[in-house]
Image (cartoon, rainbow, N blue to C red; front, side):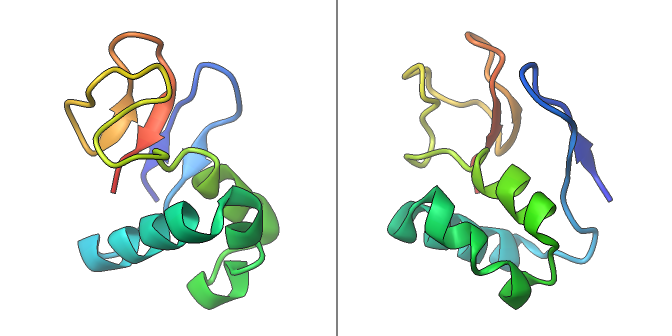
Length: 89
């Protein structure tokens, strides 16, 4: 599992078998339904509740933009400005 580090919380694990399409599907659900509701969809993606929470709370709220309003340079990683982990799928 790829492990992503966040400056404010524990490392995030993303399943190895998630394709780009699966990641985009997860991100779209988080953006559409909100972080808390998307956690309840954990069974659909083969995640335990803790992993679902970690992932959903790090999906960027707006594609390509960090919460600090910095343009994201990559799809997965820390913001160059604030250091927040962004899963910008």
